[in-house]
Image 1 (tube, each protein chain N blue to C red):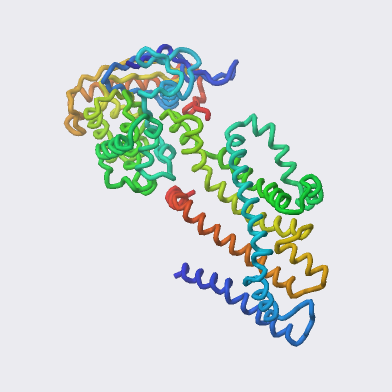
Image 2 (spheres, each protein chain N blue to C red; image 1 turned 45 degrees about the horizontal axis):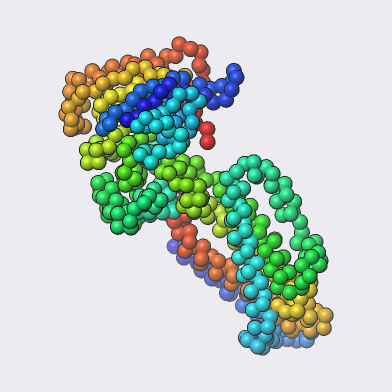
Length: 269
Length: 261
């Protein structure tokens, strides 16, 4: 369904050029849950922005159902890491979820139903008339997820969505994502720097090298579903996979090239 | 506790201090019998006589009308011009020097030419004059406000397929609105100044015109009554604006309190 073919992103030109992404290729099939992990600064956000059509890669292309992505496609919704800058503070929860629906060809009743259903599935029905900043961080990210679900995308992109919430909330949100994925039958591409999280959630984990970034290995995760925060993480398979991914990334942390300053996320605005 | 203390001080400043000053003036002026400084009782009688409401329609209404229309045009134009300039760096590079030039122009320097170019000492000239100088605070604040929008807001809107106009309406305008409102507040007090200035220079009606005539005829009663009125007008307009602002930007106060901005 989604295919990245030799994605490269280079900032600047000449000897000062920063190679954020060198050559990233992988595919996501229909209904799959794919996690992308990599050492910090390897250009994960840049990669996701290219896939989301917010940024053009320097080389290579992104194909969504065989069509090249040049602008944000309608079949795709993006959940940002920074919910406080992605939910509009001047709008209530209801209007935030409505925002991407206003220009879709839907009746008022259909819009209302989509908002109610998506907020229901993240358990925030009671807070529909609150402003996002009146809610906790975890709840705000649930609003952002509800907004993405209401948009009815075929594929959901998530950019380190749980990086700024506490561990307990994080576990709850991971399970929430797994649950709505079942409910909505949605394909998910999930970027994270958390190795446990990637193995816990994914069908396959795409491990990236440090920048200039390529795909190091694609690890298949055949852990049984439904997954459970305690039982799944006690399985020998989980521990082995986690260790395997960890080793792949740790080897990346001692760079062989003389890159002394890797740009943080490499995303100019 | 300290909040209530603040309220008490504010109330005292707003009411007790003026009363004390007026009382002192009254005591001082009654015995002096100087036509340049009539006692407040005489001024208030004149105020009531003129503005409540025999000359209200002939002079106050035209002045308020000019403020309203001039300010309205300035706000609209400031936002409409400011948004594209805030969004486009090349557009800013081309236009900022010119905006800075006209903004630095002292308003009285343009009064004579405004009358000649517009062939008018009536509403057309007054409204244009007010609108021109009220434009700059709104314009510059709009540009700044739009430039300062967090790019994630705009990327979010773009990723959900909102078109350019929809993004401006749903994201750019509300995000920049707090700063636009700050510019509007400055423009509103400028509008009062420009109204008085333009009416005082050449006019056939308005509170500035009353100032001019009373100066020319050495009639100090109406002059003081007009001064008092202009002060009250400015104060009330600002107070009215604060109420509207509080309503429109309730989200902004809440958000800032949470995000510590």
